[in-house]
Structure formats: structure tokens, C-alpha cells
Image (tube, rainbow, N blue to C red; front, side, top):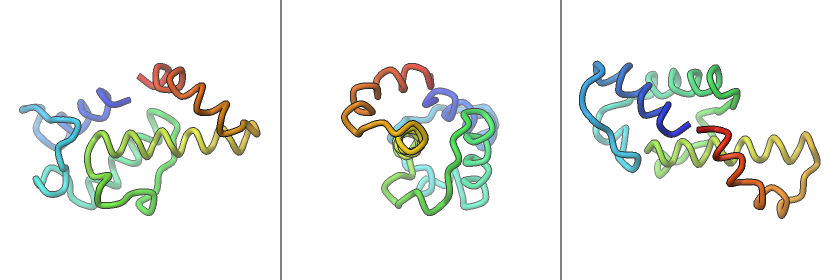
Amino acid sequence: MKEDIKRYIIETYMSGEGDLRYDQQLFETGILNSIAFLKLLGYIESTHGITLQIGDFTIDSGTIDGIVAVAEKKALGWLSMNFQLSPEHLESQKSAFQFAQT
């Protein structure tokens, strides 16, 4: 998921040029604005099936790493609610989930 989001941002908001670090602040550097961020959330939902809302994020999650962390947390929460999995089971399966999302 991380590489996919990076590629999407570079192609959509950076004219397909340049590089982007996973820990780079996307708002402070002007790469994303609020409209672009909402479009990115829509992209994540359509390609990865994870519904994210603006309220899921804090100022600290304005990086690719931060966005992916919120998405993974949201997806694991959905699995927990829908399949009644314990937090311990979810934690043990986290690496398998991360692998499946790449």
C-alpha cells in the first residue's frame, strides 16, 4: 500500500516527477492540500477497500507513513468488529495483513 500511495501522489500531484520520502510532510511542503487529500482518501478506498475519513487523521499523520498507519489501524479495527477477533489475535496477524496490502 505504501508504494502505491507514493506512486499515486507523485503521478497525480507532482507531474510524475521527483521523489518522495515516506516520512515527508505532505501538507507543509505543499504537495497536498485539503482537496488533494480528500481525493487521496477516495483513491485509497477505491483501490484498497479501506474507508478513511478526514477525522481519522491528525497533523502528525500527514506523511505517507502516517496515512498508511491510519489505514492499517482502521482495517484492523474493521476486521476486529466484523470477525470478533481479539486484540491479541489481530496483533499476531498484523504482519500477514501488511504483506497482503503491499
